[in-house]
Length: 464
Ligand code: SAH
Ligand code: SF4
Ligand code: F3S
Image 1 (cartoon, rainbow, N blue to C red):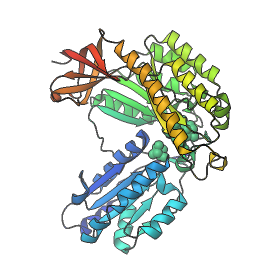
Image 2 (image 1 turned 180 degrees about the vertical axis):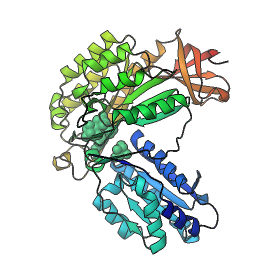
Image 3 (image 1 turned 60 degrees about the vertical axis):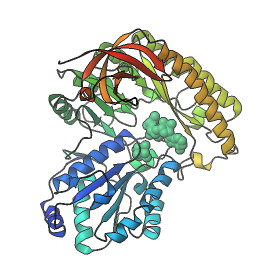
């Protein structure tokens, strides 16, 4: 694997400056996971580096870029719908450049569809094009022709990309890219390529910079953070990396995702217990509660092993909470398999659950399996799952009333005059306060709950 370093493309910047009469504006929208959102922040950074300003509506934009997700069919349909809606804009402004990038554009059949059915899309490139975006734009402008890349990716990590972060107090920090797990339903390994870990020094430098700038929450990202370090010259695993980062002094908290149960180690759980900077919440996607399906999914753990891990974490980390992803209706899922999932959900008692109806992804192994269950049956199972989960989570959330907790104030609340703060355990509390508190730590007394949302009153704000 190679480490590349971004450098400013002066020639492309010149071509862009000559093409636009006034400084151009770019609209970048990212779909999908946090990794993609972080890529979107880098796409914006790179565009600013060659003279673009950033805008947040398509009507104003000189460049519209959709950074796409391929994980489920629904995500892809949404992107095609949104691209379709741009046709009129392009007709009224032929100089508008429309680009599609990211995970969808990493699939040859999607590039072909864009080539044939969306002639007004000017630029198409995959997940590996962020640093080369200025050069691609310059080529599109100077040749006056569409630029569509055949999907490929370098076996490389690009460092020092400029970035324009969405938030001034919460940041995404990728520690690795790609995935080697090939869960049979999942397209990610095909579109994101093989696992590549960043050098610990590069991660530490970015982490330090974030803490110095006052970022209070830093989320470490990877499709499977537990396999961090594979292939690096130095022997280092995820727990070692976390311990290294926690040596940086400052008032911050660390979250991470995603942790694959097959290699979430006791060492990692001990580290979470020992390090005050680490949030006491683990996103540990189980996908199914049936050993038979876990095997078919190529997940490499059993329900018993998963529960052992949860038990060990609960013993070591007082107050730890769990969240999970679950797929309903994997090919061949029987009523009995599904009931085992319900049973597991009851046993673990997740605070949050992200649930998905299985979506067939061409090119994956599961796409070859017979799938006789109707969509209506799958939807009915989904409803039962959500109902079970709501009962558990609502009760667990309600039981927290009376506690006084420290939160990071994130956003305006849904009720006017309130804000939302996130607890260490990832629950959210709504409480009356001014929006100027967003980005601060606050102490809140929990007074009750509405569904999965806690409600409370402000005790005090730190730094005031
Ligand atoms: N690397 C992470 C997940 C990335 S994708 C992990 O292993 O946990 C996020 C979630 O999307 C997955 O956990 C899974 O629940 C869901 N997912 C992935 N492929 C899917 C598919 N084909 N159909 C439905 N859900 C899917
Ligand atoms: Fe997909 Fe599995 Fe990799 Fe997660 S670990 S990205 S679910 S293949
Ligand atoms: Fe989607 Fe790509 Fe993330 S497929 S979930 S945006 S890695």
